Length: 289
Image 1 (tube, rainbow, N blue to C red):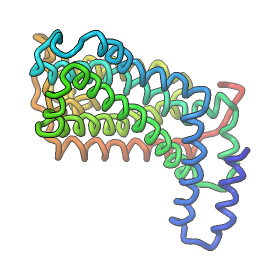
Image 2 (tube, one colour):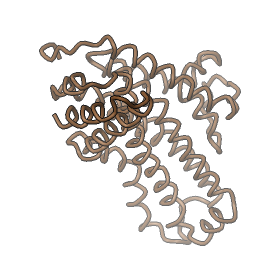
Image 3 (tube, rainbow, N blue to C red):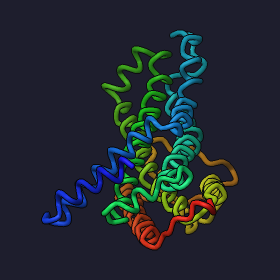
């Protein structure tokens, strides 16, 4: 009910305003309401657990490998983190975290029987899509970018304190850290838009989410043309340390950053347009969900 009241008050106070001003204020109001739900709602517990999955093993390992007794040479840690990031953080934590956040932006309101409060408010449904999407995007970026940064620091600093300082401040370490953080942000942008649409178009979003997960994991087996029909291909093209995909992988040239980044953003915009079209024709039937 509070969402209905707040958005309605903004609409009433801006009746004579230019539409963009009204829409921006409504987006901010929706964003504030949704960001609180994303971080403090009961569904946020799973998010925090997901974000901790890659951190806990590294945090537990740190005290038991004092400096001078490491199990790998410092030069190998670039590849170790690249594998850890690509396999656990990017393909698993970020993927399922975005699925949980963005599919629940509308599906969660339907389950809670609260979506009609937004639909009864004098707010365009496209504005609702944008406000909810940005709330999910900020939530996922804060959680999973934080996870990425913490994991990289935990892998290096406890084991090689002096080498790590030189690596991050005088070597390529800081650039690699920022690149991995940027890849995580792009993953949240791309996966978030897709899962938002999945939550709108499918009554049971688990099956399409698993199909997409399988497609992303099997990307290394696909021919070069089909590889480009995935988010993970563009993300892997941006990684600072390329990871071998195994003897059965189909080799494809990585997409340059000046193509990969705009491509992801353009596809995200197209997906959000599809979501806006869908929600304009959406009717609520709580009894069937």
